[in-house]
Length: 332
Image 1 (tube, rainbow, N blue to C red):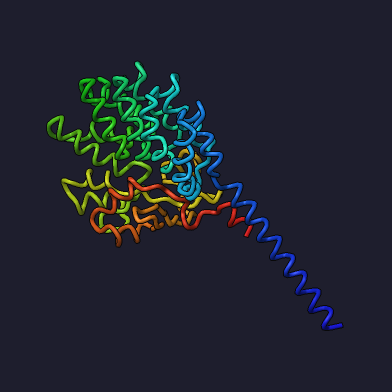
Image 2: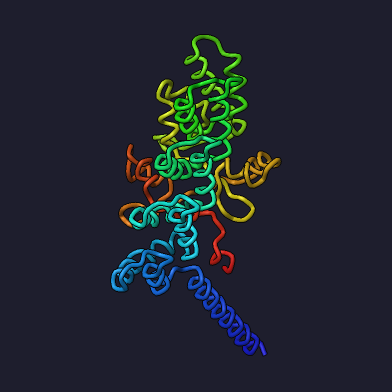
């Protein structure tokens, strides 16, 4: 009887392991971007209208990387609509062919892109020339800037009851501060309280408003690979802190959906309770694909690329964080 029980238990374990392997295979296939599906997209009007042979060659090259980045054909279609659509950024097909895949691999959000473009190009908003609005929209969204904040900054900077800059100066400054992250209300209040020339008051006020942004919760990885707040950047880098902050890699934390988000994304997603959720969340171990084809964390990028790691990081494909709950992980 004992021998029979052991054999039955062994068979049960074998069946469970076989089922687990089968489920993992199904999940991997569902999550992957297949070469056939990608080649069909590249050859279609939804994609790039490539010749079949060219589409196949590109698909064989890109499918493994897109799969690592967790980018689907549906994601490519949405991003193409945002970049190429006449009611969106209305960029050329040549631009899409050169830039869509790198942007997709860095998970540029099509909805945020369209919203940012509307903010920058809108006559009643920042009102940039079309070509500038197109390129700067992409730049700002890649830097995790918020369209609503850029709009509020411009209104503060150009308003006679605010800082009262000439329109062209207000446009440039709103994009600069929006990319860095700057609280518009704090900017107004600090400017009114500041002393000195107008330029000095604006500098002091924007320094203060950057510290106040997101209640001081924003942190970025500096050149040394360590993470610091705005105030710590200001204290260490002095006059060059803005450029160093712009070069920094934003901190991300794990949300309840098992994905990683920046602090500004937390504020948008969790609204009034964002700060409590942010404090309770665990830091995410971010990962990107290096030029040698290997996956590295921030610390490993620092070790591999040394002083150039931030530039290489910004250009690299973004993978789901090491701690993120993927479909495979949930099956396991």
